[in-house]
Length: 257
Image (tube, rainbow, N blue to C red):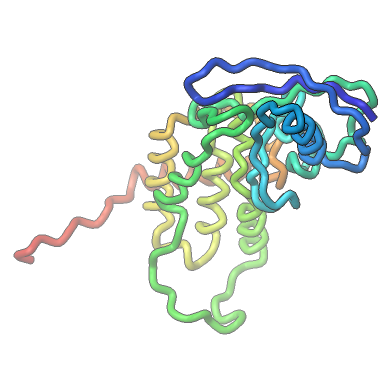
C-alpha cells in the first residue's frame, strides 16, 4: 500500500516548526505505524536528509514511550492501544496521515515529534512512592485486601504514563495521570500512612508544572491506551479536599527538643 504523510518537523525547541509531506510506498498492512516511519526514515537517510525524530522503546504497548498525535488523536483512533500498536491496515491505500507531537505547555517540543515529558516524572518524585518501612515481603494473605480495592488498585496501576491524556485534554490537564498514580497506592494498606500528604504533594507539583485543570471533557479517558477511568479523578479530588482541610505536616524537631 501507499500512503502520504504530513509530518511535523521542528529542528529544536527554539525553532519554528512546520508540516512536511512524505510518500510512503510498498508498505505492508501488517506493519505498525512506527515501522512505517522506520521505512520512511531509511529512505531519508539514503538521500542524506535528517530522519524524522519520534519516541519509541518497547514497541509492545508497555513502556509508554511512544507518543504521536495521528490525524488529531493521541495514539490514533484505535481505542485502547498505543501508537506502536496501531497498524497500517487501519488505513486505506492512498490515505493522507497527519502526524505531530503531543501538544501541551508542560510538554515542550525537543525535536520533530519528540517532546519533554519529564514533568510527569517530577509529579511522581513529589510523592508517588511509599517511604514507610514495611519490612520484608510478607507471606501471602498476611495483609488482607478487599478484592474490590485490589482490582481498583490494579486498574489504576495500569497507567503507563504516556501523557496521551494531557495531549487530548483541551486544558492540557494531567489529572488522570496523577489520579491513577495516587489511587493505585492509596487503595492499598501500605499506602494509607502517606495517603493525604501524597495527595497534597503530587497535586501541588502538577500545578507547578503548568498543567491545566480538569473540566470533565472526558477526552483523557477516551484516548488512554490502558482505558484508565476518570472515576479516579473524583477519588483524587476527595482525597485532596480532605487533605487540604485536615492534614498538617509534622513539625521538624528542633535541636533543643
